[in-house]
Length: 173
Ligand SMILES: CC(C)(COP(=O)(O)OP(=O)(O)OC[C@H]1O[C@@H](n2cnc3c(N)ncnc32)[C@H](O)[C@@H]1OP(=O)(O)O)[C@@H](O)C(=O)NCCC(=O)NCCS
Image (cartoon, rainbow, N blue to C red; front, side, top):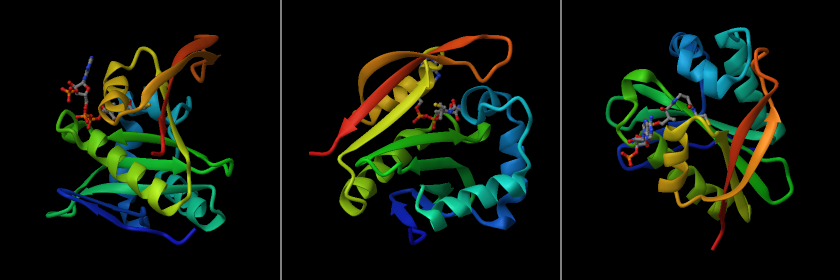
């Protein structure tokens, strides 16, 4: 997949770059991001994390964007669209602690959904989050994603065996 940039009002979405390693390292240390978004017991290495996101563009498996302030270029968060190839995509995201509560995630999800439906020929987008993460549930609701299923999945946290998950879906058209 050709790396893309998307400007959506006050946000600019662009591929991650090696020079973003410091801000990625900060995010990967954030307890909320580690709890809800990265789902690994160990803190991943920032350069490896960026290389993995870059590889997703090259092999067509995912499109990962740094969410930045369109005016200042400041990195505010991350959004990824996985494209498993069955006409459906799945979005995931995190926002840096200092940029939360300003509608950034909802705005970025809307921008990626419009791009996915217009340019990638996808017919459906899924969004899943832990049931205990009401902020992410609100992002899904604001993006027009309907709550379609309640799932019980194996936990990424060694202390718990399962986790309750909301699956939200947005259909094209
Ligand atoms: C979840 C997250 C992405 C939201 O990002 P954000 O840019 O702050 O989201 P928005 O500002 O677009 O919207 C957040 C909404 O959740 C609401 N919210 C925040 N905390 C909440 C809580 N504890 N209970 C209920 N609603 C909550 C906000 O009020 C807001 O809704 P509103 O616009 O109706 O007021 C961000 O908090 C984050 O990165 N958290 C850690 C990682 C994570 O959870 N990633 C998602 C994994 S599925």
